[in-house]
Length: 614
Image 1 (tube, one colour):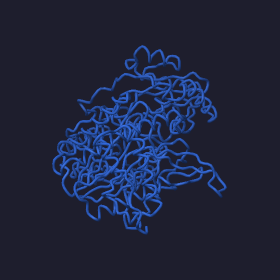
Image 2 (spheres, rainbow, N blue to C red):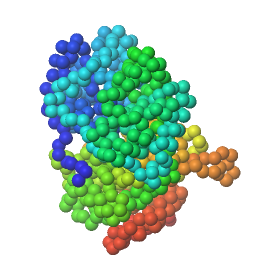
Image 3 (cartoon, rainbow, N blue to C red):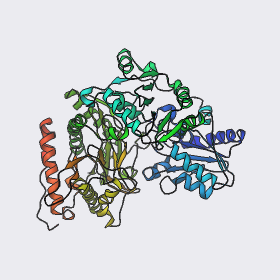
Image 4 (cartoon, rainbow, N blue to C red):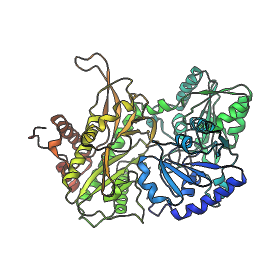
């Protein structure tokens, strides 16, 4: 199994560990310290060694930060994790604030005492984060102070070692472009920004640029490392050679100078002293890199990671791989949904369904000669009230039986060498209530609205997010997460900068893959989320139109549960879309099934009645 189900946090440890941190602060003449859920690369998934926030607080979510002061400690999480945070941290030690509505800079403006000295690790906060924090503190006569060594690393006595998993070469047939050609493109882009060099800090960009993959963090095929790309082509990659067998080492030697991670700081200092103009992405790059350049006479050019947009706009080979991966993955999902239907309420639990689904993904991968490399994130397997916890992770302590009259939400994905998948379906256990059916149908209407959208070039994710919510809004309902995140090509299941959300300011470009996942959550009762992956496609001008448009192609292939529908809430166009989608699922997945699984899909994908006046 790629997943484990042991208890992952202990709230009772928080008080003692916060007390240790406060002793450290007093010795350093600091009034407080920030501990983010991030590593030196600012990635969503981090190695066990970098789980400092979890060690201190017990919170295991993928986004958050805690500010520990002498008399209070505040944990900031976004809407996905509000319920989870309440369950995982000691309320006597930590209060919980919204990372979105009241982020740390805003909170400090209102709550920091005059002259507050707040410590931080400059490797764990981005340039833009530090700028906002410094502005907030200085407005109250305070000071943001970079520390030389992270106190958690001193206090955490059994902190794991840094990972040393092997690097592999990603095949050109799946990458669709040679690494040397990518590097030439990026070198030209760096020069166009007026820079001599650019630092790649995001391991996804490192992986995409050099056509390599690794296994240093959970569920995402990344090799942790950095690169300094040069406009003149003298590139350097900073990666532990113990990760490189003979073939990857020989391969990378042809592309860049391979340097140990410990050489990054002195190399950057030397370049700065020589007058380098170094491009750093203020949203991704650690403040420490800015400090190294500016303190040694270099110039920081604030510019986006040069690999980020090229990585996000998938080429033909990457899109072909994603389509193939989704077809295989859909077969596994259909087999799982059919298996679920054959179980009696009260006979299986959340963990059993996770194990079943992973086993089916493995089996389909083996049958098709494209093995499951990993799950793309820990499966969200939530029955009843657990489904209302947006990013619930089942453990042996929280595991629930799928009980009669409840809903079951399963959000899962696979990592295959040709693509990354992510899908959510919600199904009834027994007979759903009228309320459940109504709200499921409203969520589906939002998904269909995004799926069928046509939009002009230059449209951003924030411009279309509301389309997924309108049906819910009309009934006084909403959901507290974005509608969609970007997805990589055998890379991170949560890829930026593309997203469909109120904060999604990136233009949606052809080739970008995103999720389409509206939801509804009734705390303490049930959750509903429906998710397909979609890709932005260019389209010619519509008949009678003036401009070329963009649209979405749906990649995910699995039926929606017809028992959860209130057809009278669906209009004619929505019903036609649903019938066409189900017909496509049957046509593409059907040939991979037989027996009772095929019979189940034929029934699940049958056309719906269109005899109402919706």
